[in-house]
Image 1 (tube, one colour):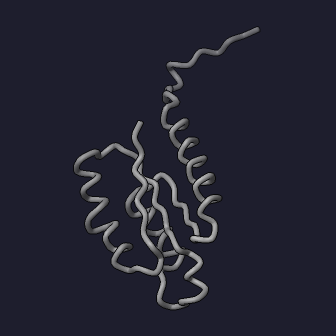
Image 2: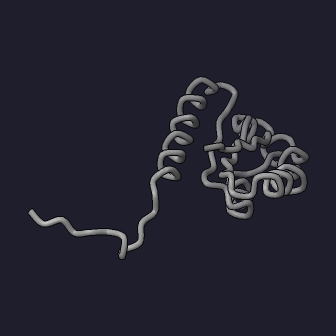
Length: 112
């Protein structure tokens, strides 16, 4: 199974806009059923730059708009933890997607 990770920097409005303008349309056109994980980087800049960054609620809204499977964010100071956390989430996501979906009619009740 393939998963796309789309990243943008919270201090770069163009990278944020390009998710919806460029990257998501291209991915949906080429591989429409491939799950997307949206990732915000440089979140530590929210404290130092204040009003000049993409806020968390904006990022979460973008995640909903593009129908991302999950939204994650990290700062440069926590890159190692981010990698562990994000890949753990992606593995869980992959596992959930790989579980076959059954209807009630396909299930059998086993009695002991």
